[in-house]
Length: 288
Image (cartoon, rainbow, N blue to C red; front, side):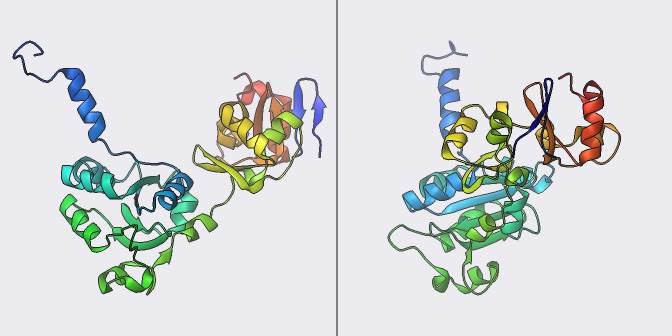
């Protein structure tokens, strides 16, 4: 399906010297850098690595507005004993509730923070809700230790672990993936911008960007997007700026009701807001 053009506007369908042995500031910085934990931000990256290396995943589910989450970051995850254990035995994944709502729903998270242990077979084998001290977390990890040679499965969980799971056995972490909705209704952003076509992407060809799972019509288009994602990313993350500018609640725009203006994708909540933008684009941020 092609776009209609009108001029430049394209309509889419809808001290250091104190002692000789003092540690230099740069050495201190290097030491601090080494001691930091490396948290993956992508669920797919973490699960792929867990399968490849046959390591369990520690999933930290947090939110920027959550006080206990900040306390765990400042107090729990700075404990050297815990950090050594995590670096040695786990793939670390941090998920922000506001950036990954579909994943959070798939994990059935009811309170923050929530800490999960997921086996390399992608089974949730331990769920811990609320603030956990470093000591408590180390003790909990000892109870669900997973090794590449002898991974535990749902039938090998002890009674305490079963009570922390969602049912009598280990819960599949794939349930979280299966609930993910595709960003921008699954339309391929590269097709929209470069080909002026509304084309649904392939759910097997995706990338995660700015908290959205975006799919593409072809792998070539996925690679093209990943080389310069900002070029294809919709203005205001796809929100309808007409609605928000007029004091209405911000609404996610529909790719079928959008325009290409000055080389960028703009999405709107309905045909009416699209037409108001077309009449006076500069009033709604079109002079960006």
